[in-house]
Image 1 (cartoon, rainbow, N blue to C red):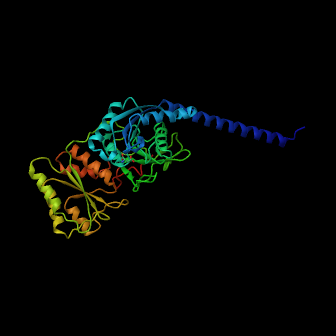
Image 2 (image 1 turned 90 degrees about the vertical axis):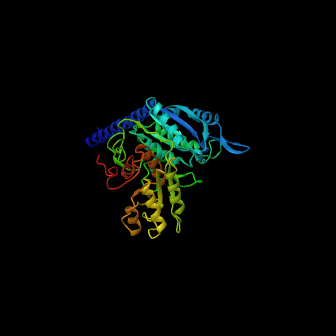
Image 3 (image 1 turned 90 degrees about the horizontal axis):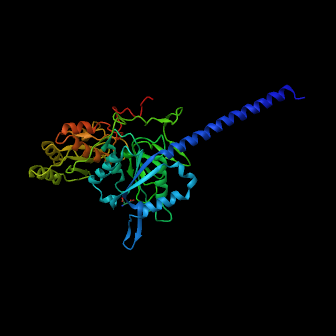
Length: 410
Ligand code: ASP
């Protein structure tokens, strides 16, 4: 006859088995639910060009219209049992396919128009794009899509999908998997080499390495390894987990308002070097302003360190005065890719402040350039409005005292 202690042991084993069964069952059900939600997603792939779809020709690598869509289909057919992890996708292809070095704000508008026209039909958007100006495009889309409430993913590759060893397949599949997720962040991101980076914080950091993009002044949002993981999780107890980046800025998710970039906006960038001569810049401001034909809207001054310029150089002072005289807005962005501009720190910086040069805080030059364009279009000819709005966190592009995203209380 079994002893009492043996019964207790058998019961304990049975209870553990039942608990494990329930846990495993739930896990399987959860996975099945995630797959089903993924399958239901409708994704629009917007193929704009770039290395990703190029094929070798006697003149070197160039885009080929037919190639990428066919390759994509082939890859998906290789894994029929895994197909459910990715939603249904359609592909629109731009004509011509562009090397992104040939793009201008008119191309940002083209992408903005496609997303806006198809916004209700699709759950997420994947843009295939060249790497060279990808950070500019991602920044521009983030400002252009106010109130965005769907994931927009920009990706590309260092090696074309036609090459034996390439990063194109990984970047496309990672982007499609992410686009199919229920918990994908509803903002513009760059996905590259398994990193998910906020678009307006991204920077191309290498023309050769697979890890071509970084986020030098802001945390990476999430990563793919064997599985997907958010880097900073605040509340893991809800499904899907809520990250501190989920609720980010005032307009997010309200309703989509697309702002196209104005055609004749003129934003220029000056990279400071020791001994820089400002006279040619002063001349160009005077010439353009007095010509009666267009105007320079803004200069982004790429200053030294914490936001300094050569305050003792009279020519510099003359340049700043001339800009103010003609209503040309002046922005201060540091040449350093980490930290932030603080004009009050040195006499050289406060000199800029006195000349109405407003701080770009910790923005990348790519984000600052797109933002300056955006604001010039939004408040044409109103320098004060442009200056004020430039210092605001419009869609996660800068941090600061007025920024609430990092410490948002869930
Ligand atoms: N020049 C190419 C482009 O930006 C480079 C690339 O796609 O990686 O379109």
